[in-house]
Image (cartoon, rainbow, N blue to C red):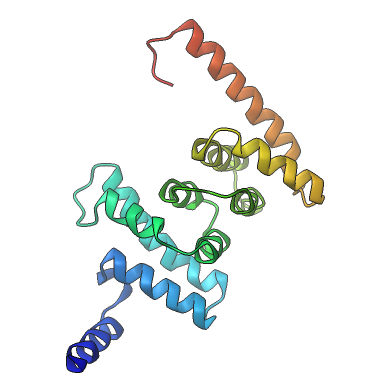
Amino acid sequence: MKEFGFFKRLWAEALPFVARSPEMKVAWLIEVFEKNSLTDEEISPYMHLLLNEYENFRNGLNYEVGVDCLKQIFAQLDRNVIAKMIQCVEIYDLPVLLSLITELSIDEAVLALRKKPPIFEKKFLLVIDKVFQAVNECRDGLLEQATQKMMREGEVPDHFSASYERFKEILHDEKILCSLYPHAKP
C-alpha cells in the first residue's frame, strides 16, 4: 500500500498543473498556501487556470471538469483557504471564484470588495460592477453588510463609495424594469 502512495505522490509532482484534475489542482494550491512558498502574485496565474477551466465548462465548452465537481470541492475547503484564494486571485477572476463559494462570509466579502482594478484598466467601473454583482448574488444583504463593516473599520478604498452608490442605483433601476416588464429576463 505504501508503494501506491509513493507512485501517486510521484505522479502528482511530475504532472504539470494544467494536466491535473480539479481535485489535484486544489490540493496543490492548498499545499502551496500551507508551505507559504509562493507570493500572492505568483499564485494568481494558477488560480486563473483553475477558474478559467471551470468558467469554460460552465459556459458550455466541452471540458472534462464538471460544474458540480469544483463546487463540491470548494464546499469542503477550510475558510482560511478560501480567504487566501480571494486574496490571491486577480479582480478579473473574482466573480468566477465567488460563484464557486457556497457560503461567503462577511469578512470574505470585505476581502473581495477591497480589491481594485489595476491603474491601466480602461473599463474600471465595469470591473468593479462585476465584483459588486458577484458579492450581491452570494446572498441577500451580504453586500450591504460587508459595506457597513468596511465603513465601520475605516478601510474603504478610494474608488469604493462612488462605485457602490452607482451600483445601488443600477440595482434600483433593475427592480423598476423588472416590475414594468415581468416577463423579461434580468
